[in-house]
Amino acid sequence: MVATLGGEGAVRRPDAVGAVVGFAAENHWLDAAVVPGDAAPPVDDPGLPHCLWAVADAVPGRREEVGIAMPCMGFALDALQPVAPVAVEEPSLADVGEINDRAYGQVEQLAPLLRVLRDDRILTHALRVDGALACVALTLRVGDDISIQYVATEQRFRRCGLASRLLLAVMARAHATGASSATLQASPDGLPVYERLGFRRVATLRAFLRAA
Image (cartoon, rainbow, N blue to C red; front, top):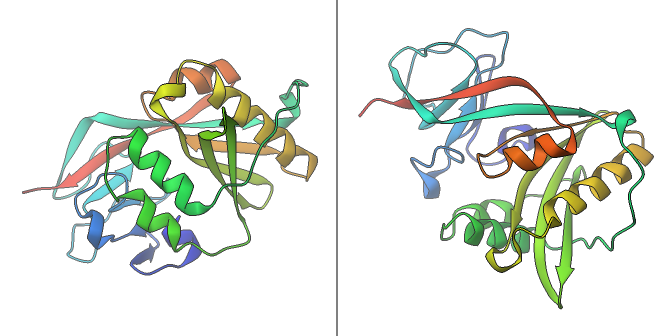
């Protein structure tokens, strides 16, 4: 996202799109870049981040971290079925970051990054339970696609179907405004949720870390 929006630390090359994030150095998901599917993986250099995500079998000078490979998933919004309306709020970017950090057992990793994002294509979404923000997500609109990111549920509200209800409402809203697809990268926790919603795997991003 930092690369897409052109923020500080952005890496925007034909063979790598991502960011060098100093305060999250060696975080596989933040200090990272993606190798475009039609590009050859780059030879490592100091200007690249800690992790390169690629569909390739290998990346020169790096080792694969097999256990954190991420499925890339897509959903054709024409296939959406009508759902009962829910009250979706628009939390602050800081709230989205803080809830993600708590959900993933981190301290000040995503929150500082999200606080400084400024772009009209970004929308935030949340469901509230008993007066508290319980489940959040962020979307980035690129053409007729919405990229779904930073989906997280507070620990005490999990196993209640909140993420499914929130994402269905978010996708319905996007479809009503002209979007035709939704895409995301699934974490191990989120994968079963997305599969139940009807997302299909279109590729797998493999993590290649800089050698020690």
